[in-house]
Length: 118
Length: 163
Length: 326
Image (cartoon, rainbow over all chains, first blue to last red; front, side, top):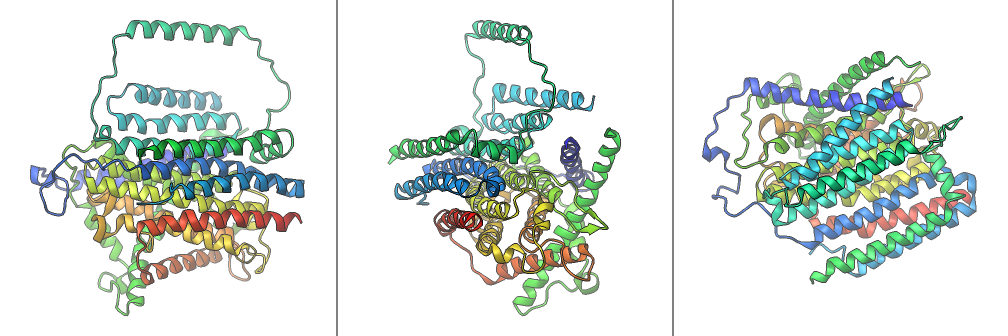
């Protein structure tokens, strides 16, 4: 079992090396002529102004927050999903309650406008 | 032997990135250093044969919570990479407090007789966790859904007070 | 006992093989396929000039990109700017670890059959989001940052319906392992595409959104945000993002065949051939959708995920649970 994860680790490391190889090739092959006009960021041809930050809009935060809550729900669903067959109807009712409460949460978020993108 | 090497490497990765998280002057770099830290912890879970826990560590901590943190950082003015000092006037007191805590913890760790359990490690595989949820920890399972519901409602209340 | 150094060497070689597969059969051939299919659907020829029937087009493109200058925007955070494409590419590569390519004798051709197969796959999808956020921010460009934030919002919104579909399949098969799921699909009618049709639909839609493909490609739409989070990325760095995206798309297609189309199962032909056929069928379908539908607006896209697919997924899980236990 631990060998499986050794493979995962090696994949990550070798993957990074392999992905970095083309970058190294570019470093060796491509020209490097930096000058100020080239290094300005792209703003449709206009001279960029202002700092690069977006106005704080609470909708990004709300979306990621609701996502966190439901992601935690999902990690409870996975183990249930693979063993519930052996427990029969009882397991179904347990999950009915669990999912039901979270659907309530989703409905609440919907009605409070947390899922609106405006 | 291989496990010891893995443990050492993972610990170094985790601790080094944690130092960057705490000490970096650039807040985005600090937040992004959370990723190696959390990956190191996931690796440590795997050494404990808790595969599912490691998987959800990556899925939730890195995929959801770090994303949440990054969203918030990038949307505020701090996200422009403003530098701020990481040192305050109470360095000495801080170091003292940390040292006392370290000594206390070590005293506890080395003073306890950890029961050298014969037999197998407790199972933390996904089926085992599922079975536990449906048998002995079922109350926790249901209560968790309530906790999540309350957290959701609370967060919406806080966030929408802006309006 | 396990021979660690040998396993490390085997793992390294497999990583090179899979990376090459992903880069050539996936990304390079995939880009060419995209252009040919697009041409076919739009009643025009795709690339025909370079190589026989244009087959070497992407090779030429890659050679060109290798010579392009790496421009780093002023005041960009160089360290993060450089690592972001690597995160996306490596996460794309790691998704392939749990994909079974077929059988050879009685050995399954899979890098490692992890016990938490589909959870691992979902986790690698989550990691891609971080790479995109980091890339968008590190460019020090308003449009990149906005593109990155919007893309990240889209991707996390669709991860949930994706997880719902995965859970439904896990319920049907009783295991999180990809090999176990393929083995649980007996014969043609046993494919989960029939028994789990709603999950199939939800998975396909969510997969399209996860890899930022039309009709869900607003974050990279040229008419909206230039190129979104990778506006400032030139040359090979851009190619790495594309490699990650196409690799992820092929991984999603491969996962679709594993979960819903019976993986490598099929009469007569060798399992590997069946697997590739099914995977390319799904890829073709994704490309067909791309060249047919107009783009969704961001709020339409998010509404679809939160108000349609997620409730549908939850209800389907309850229905499946009912069906199995009663």
